[in-house]
Image 1 (cartoon, one colour):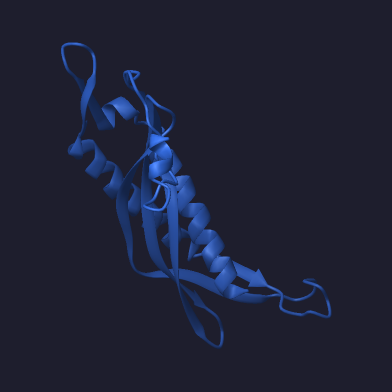
Image 2 (cartoon, rainbow, N blue to C red; image 1 turned 180 degrees about the vertical axis):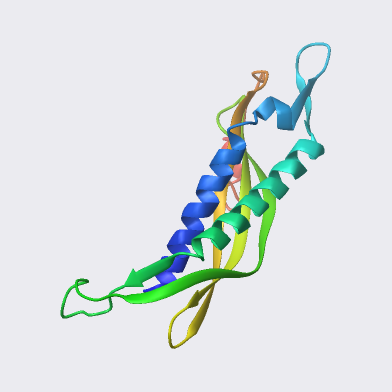
Length: 175
């Protein structure tokens, strides 16, 4: 129960803090889409200063929130007989180690001329549960979607979908 409670708290905090930080930022602030003279997209450039600021800000806020929650006493009832009712055992949740964050960017095709760009923040933190009898440590990993954008490109003159084609059925294309 303590491990599940620690995971739950860390996951909720990381989602909330990432959402709060991202309220003040837009896709255009974090990424610059460069186009050629004909309006075709040639490059997506990351603006690292605001991105690094977000990564740092989220990590600090998560660490502070977990530390604040660690000052709370949480009571868990462990009696199966009483179905979660009755006296609770006081526990204290505190963080140990550091909150680690890692930014991940992903592009996926969304049709013949659209690409979905998603940016995730991987949050890893170690949470320790202090009980009257034991200390339980749990590593919590959470991936938070920070921002996404659909990039629309030029419609190609021809399109070939070669998914599922391998050496055994490649001649089927010719026929």
